Image (cartoon, rainbow, N blue to C red; front, side):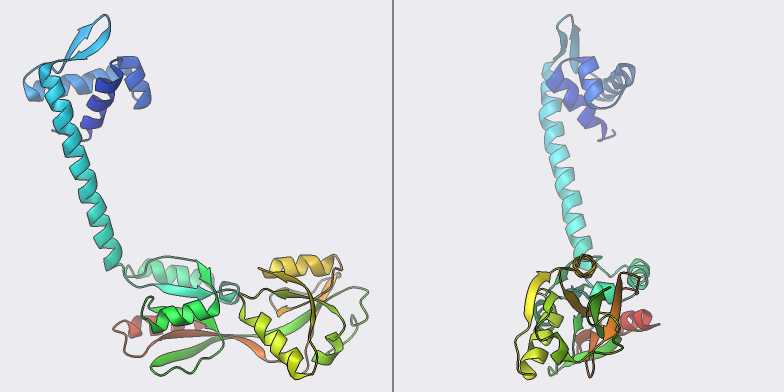
Length: 285
């Protein structure tokens, strides 16, 4: 007996109307009628009385309905349990600190995940500290974060370094500069990534070290928004160099600026350390 036909029987039982039930099941009335007849032949008895008022269940039909609902529920629970176990078996999880997905070769990670069934595909970003702590707590197997964090037992591999630049709009007083110092943005309306990003705190520290607090007029969640606000002359932007220069906006290096460094991290004693090493090697290629 094909248990998938239970649903067909149950819908007809509830609707008591062949065309209505067939419509709900995306079947033709003839097709549904054939399925019901096949079930009745397997049961060796009629499950419905065909009357002018529709399909009326027999006593056997009532029993079949109750038992088939129970069987369907059990089957669904079985597949749900199997799916949960399967998810646990595909146990290897990677976390992404905010902004790191823009700096790396996403397709390489995607290809690696597909070729290694242990990976649980997830592309959610969190703040830097969250990813760091989740790896340390062994909640996820590896992560991509910004900056190197000396933690005992934690392996950090440099994946990519990105230059930090100022994005300047055409007509700004700094437009023709080849380089600028951090002090030259002292009184400038500044557009930065928000507090969830490592660079925001690094910008504050760099400015405070030079004796001033930056005038941050916009804190955003993605580089495209920085680019848009600079293009509309809302202010100048500070960001890793992710965008090419144009007639409207150009990037200018900052004197003695640090680079925006993306590190791959994992626990040295993790049983999956070799898989993390292979992943990070693939990203760097």
